[in-house]
Length: 126
Image 1: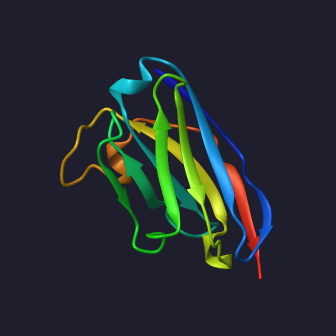
Image 2: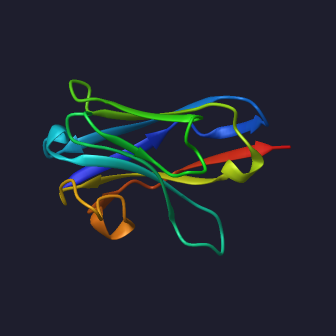
């Protein structure tokens, strides 16, 4: 089992930056592809960004391309999400997740991820 804890959420203004962190424990962190997702009340959880187990490949939702950067430090068992130029529509509960699914056409889907954190709230005021 992989245990995930997110840090770094908060209340910011439009245009500000935040960096989320996700600390992993349990099984070998570097064995898993990792992702960030977000959810707002009444809507389904949506994909934000993902990174392969060694960090060689990343993928982003169109809504965050050019503003968000996902990265990982396997030596520290930590996943990051650098969020710049934040917008009110980025508001949500942000989850990190671990996937043993492997890289493929479905690798960024919610159903491809096995382990989830509890989430950290990001609120962007206009």
